[in-house]
Amino acid sequence: MKYGTLITLFKPSAEQADHLLRLPALSPVVVAVDNSPHADTALHARLAAQGVDVIANHNRGGIAGAFNAGVEFLIRRGCDVFFLFDQDSTVPDDYFHRMLLGCASVGDPRFLVGPRIFNLNVQRDLPLFTVRRWSAQIEPIRDGAHGLQPCSVIISSGTAISLEAFRALGRFREDFFIDHVDAEYCMRAQAHGVPVCVNADVSLPHELGKPTPGQHWPRVDIFDQSALRHYYAARNCILVARDYWHSYPALALINLITLKHLAFVLLHGQQKRMKLHAILCGIGDGLRGKYGRV
Image (cartoon, rainbow, N blue to C red; front, side, top):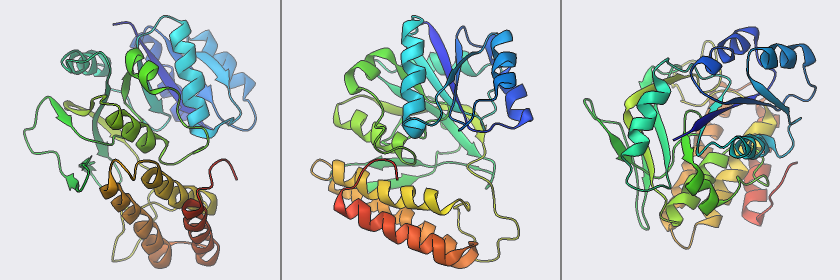
């Protein structure tokens, strides 16, 4: 399998840019899709000089647009497996070799395979989220677990997507723009019989947002973010459930995430009034079936 790597950027720090420069030694093709509003021409030139192709996407289509632009670039370069990362991920040296071993064991040329995500903010692995027609389950990855763990939703960073899966499923939904773009794609995969798995043999350290300093009890495993991001998170939770309601009624439980956002803002958030208003607007627009960028 010829694989390529896609990194999405948004105003990356110097440390994140330095980490990105390691990847051409690990992956035959590396493309950085920069969603920053204004292109950093000096950074782009530095990346290109070190073997990283750069696409200045200017946030067209949000994170979904960046994924689509990067995957289509990798297809033109002859890749048949695409690794997606965001700029916060730290990729171990043996990552691609071990992930490709897992991909080869799927038994289907179509696949979405993610690593164990070790959430640096809370110092534990993300659990497995599995949805069936009338049930939804969240369970930790067992101690000593090995190999592929089937599930329904994995986060985008670190995920390997095969060319055959992309052909079967199509492009990422740019009308979601940002937040739950990966959840929608995974549920689309499940609805089309495309395997979605976590490779328990590979761990990827990842910081899911920035922790809030001095968060008092009770702690909520949600990080503070802009009012706009709270809006998209609430709206798109509902839209994912709406899109797959007929096949998976239990997916409505994904909206418990919105309750966690509400709890975080009420307990720990700054600018509470504005952020609560954004979440309520997101809920209303989701119920009305409103998509797209706002």
